[in-house]
Image (cartoon, rainbow, N blue to C red):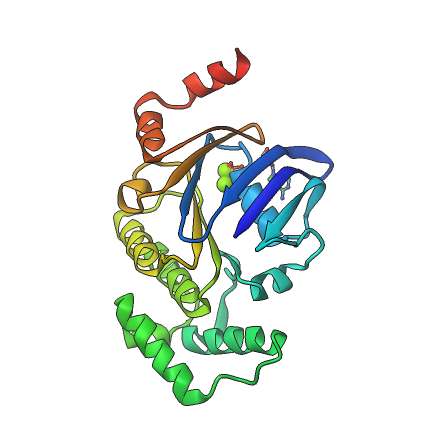
Length: 250
Ligand code: ADP
Ligand code: MG
Ligand code: MG
């Protein structure tokens, strides 16, 4: 699904990612953890193709295709989804209408006609029921006055509707409350399948009590310095990151 070889990237000429290697296969959930400032969000942004980040070396392959030069929209159309990609508030545009537009844009990029209205409605109904999202929420203006939990609900709904091949959820350190955590965890668990892959970026172990990852990687100073199974997350919870730093510096 995703293969990253020797990825180096910088922001404003400052090297942030310094040789990332990562392989994510279909059906897998990978967690990326690491101390604040280690480059987790930068990695997510570079995979999604955000323009303020410059790749200085290496390659990113999506289903064996090099996507180094692709624009963010093109990557999205190819099936890469990054949470918080659309944090904008759009008064007067509902959650549903925004989603319809996004889906039809994706289809257009693939040379497909708009999704017939009845099919779209059916999909919205199925996905919102699966995620226990009520109708009132779907008619709210996008992101306008959304609580933390509602933002998460919107994100997970977008993910469900767009059916990405690779979903990257960057759970920033801004504290997921219990409600938001439950929404994200339930959503990801319902949406994970043998055909897609998920990368969950988190500073905290507790999300991984609910989304059990197949692999855990620790990012430190722009490199993956340790990888393991779900037990690695527990070890980090117990011992913090200092022992990793010591190992790296030894
Ligand atoms: P993490 O998500 O692991 O906390 P980030 O990827 O956000 O780490 O940040 C890694 C480093 O890159 C930090 O030193 C941060 O200040 C810097 N950085 C990230 N994004 C930008 C940006 N848009 N402009 C300037 N510096 C940035
Ligand atoms: Mg940070
Ligand atoms: Mg971050």
